[in-house]
Image 1 (cartoon, helix red, strand yellow):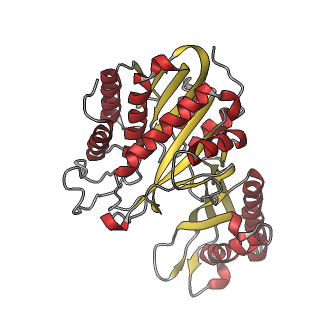
Image 2 (spheres, helix red, strand yellow):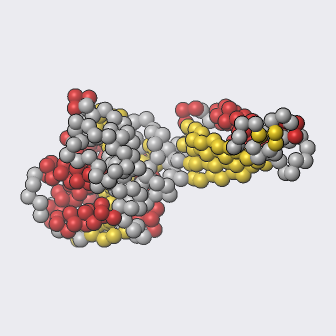
Image 3 (tube, rainbow, N blue to C red):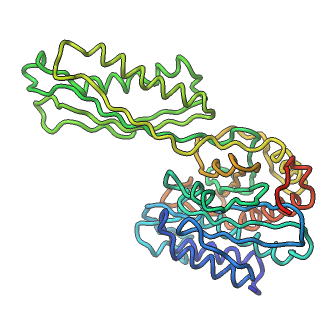
Length: 403
């Protein structure tokens, strides 16, 4: 069992994980380290979803079961040296914990240590989930669920460190809190030819330009602009300056806060393309114009359970100075949403921005860092929610499965 004070221990772990980042489904050393730490605490872990880890802290018999989840993957980002990170900058060149997942691991391990020490004082159990591949759709949460990571779990809690939010601020909301993420790819097929003979061509670049210029306008006729975002990430076509190409590829994404709006955007993309095909049709030009459309629905809308969230709000109001339980929805997406489709729970954000320490960069920045004072705050929050839920599950509106 570690002898170091919990605050120092959590910071030490966070820095160790930060210095060895690994991308989605490549978190082998991260997995090994988590397993060793859990074993040192006295908790027996198991591998899951290739590079993830699950473990259970068993209290007294009976009671309910709550899960605490940490995502463990890093990003393909080259970390920039700063005055702060000299002792723990990434040693895996080109990869970086630029989204706070190193802090998430450390906080859940911190909560695990504290809960294991108190295991004789509570009934029920705490499931620990160290999940791979949050950053890369289709993500690791679905794999964890498929392989039994949520079996016998009654509720779940997750937390995310946010660089754009002032240090120590806790924010969440009932219902839809984070957006769905969806990707579309379109191949527009025209008829190529020389620029000197435009009458013999059907220009897929013009069709693509019309699509890009009209799609948001068409969607806004059906959905309020505050309820979705859509953007084009890439457009590619053509090979030389004086030739109309035969094809153009477009890739983009959109996000919404409910399934009806997602379906509306799906339909509007198809409708807009169909209208453009009709308007650019001249005569039979070998099947042109035409299009191929592929829509990939990624992470669903993240929906915090209402009763569970109310209970968490009440608990945190009594222990934390800055709690916002009616935060605005966030257009970011999280595969934690898959867990919340299976069991009730809550997803929280924890601010780390601190200009006094020159910690001001947002998530995914190559200069992103954490005010490590928030790590003990997050640890205490996770521990406290778990213990309160195990003692008063009825307050959280949860039907207990565990026995």
